[in-house]
Image (tube, rainbow, N blue to C red):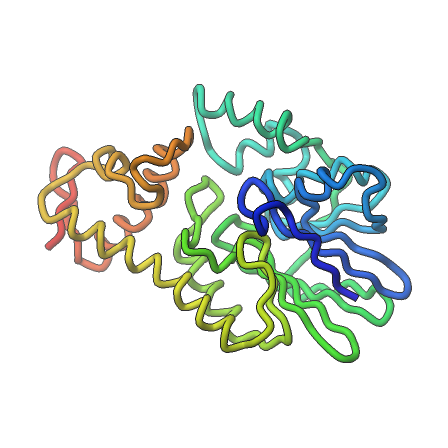
Length: 290
C-alpha cells in the first residue's frame, strides 16, 4: 500500500521523496514535494495530504491538491495559514527574509491553507486496512512528526527530516530546538518497522540494523559540532565569530541564510555548554571553553 515517489537525485534538497499511501477507503500523499510537481499532470490522486512539518520543500506540491484536506501537527499549523505566518518559522530578517519569501512562492509554490487541520501525537488515520500513526518528533520544527504506517503484513516508519544524511540534524530556525531534536532521535530509535523511509537522500532502508547504523552516524554530527565548537572557543570568541567560522555549513557553501542559521544553531550549543560549566560567559559577550 505504500509507494515512494522518489525526487531527483534521491531527494537531495530542494527535492524530496514523497509517499503515496493507499487504503481501501482513502488515499494519502505524505509531504508532496517538487518531485510530484515535476511529474506533471495528472498528479497522484489523494483524499488527504499529511505533512511531516511546515517547511518549503515538504509542501511544494500542496497547491496541486486544493480539494484534498490538509493535515499537520497543531504546533506547525500556524505556519501554513499565510506567507507571513510561514516566514515566522524561520525567523529571518531584512534581505534574507525578503529573498526567501520570493523563493517560497516562485520555486516552492507556497499557498496558504487556512483550512488545514491540526493533529496530535498518537493520532491515527485509518485508510481502510492501512493505518498511519502520528509520532511527534520536534526539534527540526516545533511540530515535526514521523509517521508509522501499518498494514496486515508490514510497516514503514517515515522519518521526514530525520533524514539520516551525512549533513546531520538541522535545528537552525526560530522554531527549532537542539535538545528536542536529540530527544526525538532517541524516540525513533525505539520504533521497530520493516522499512524506514526518509524525505531526503537515503530513501528507503529495509533493515533495522541499517537504520540504527545510519541513525548513530546522523546523531553523531551533533557531538562533532560541539567538539569543534569547544576547540574553537579555546580562545575567547563572540557569537558573530562563531557563526562566521561555520560549524553547520561548509565555509565555501553559498547559502544566503547561513549566518542566521549558524548563529541560532551554535547559540543553542553555547547556551547548554554554559549551563553545564564547560564554557564561561565573559564580559563583552565573549565565550571561552574551560
